[in-house]
Structures are given as C-alpha cells and as structure tokens.
Image (cartoon, rainbow, N blue to C red; front, top):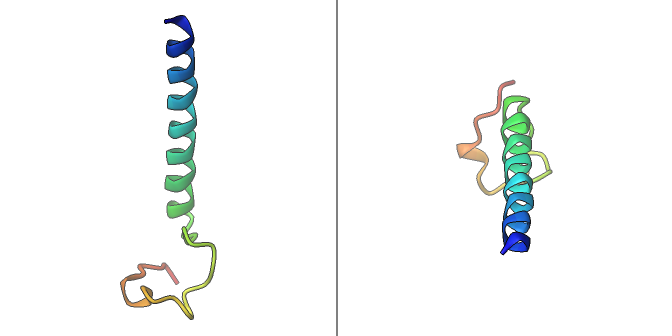
Amino acid sequence: MVATIIISIILLAVVILIIRKLVSDKKKGKSSCGCGCEGCAMQESCKRRD
C-alpha cells in the first residue's frame, strides 16, 4: 500500500514537470515537434510569434 502511494506521487511529479516544460516552451515560442515550420504539414495552424 505504501509503495503504491510513493509510486503514484513520483509519477504525478513527473507529469507535472512535463506539463511545466511544455507550457514554458510554448510561452517561449518553441515548437513541440522539434523542427521548423517550413516543411510542417500543420504550418497553416502554427501560431508563431515572429
């Protein structure tokens, strides 16, 4: 029972850190795909701040 709670807390912390990183990257204008928008199929829906 205690092990389940500890593992759940660790997993929740990891998820929170991932979400924080994604939000931070979005605020900085970074792409989530890791590449530029030139060849992206979703280029039209990209809301980049140039």
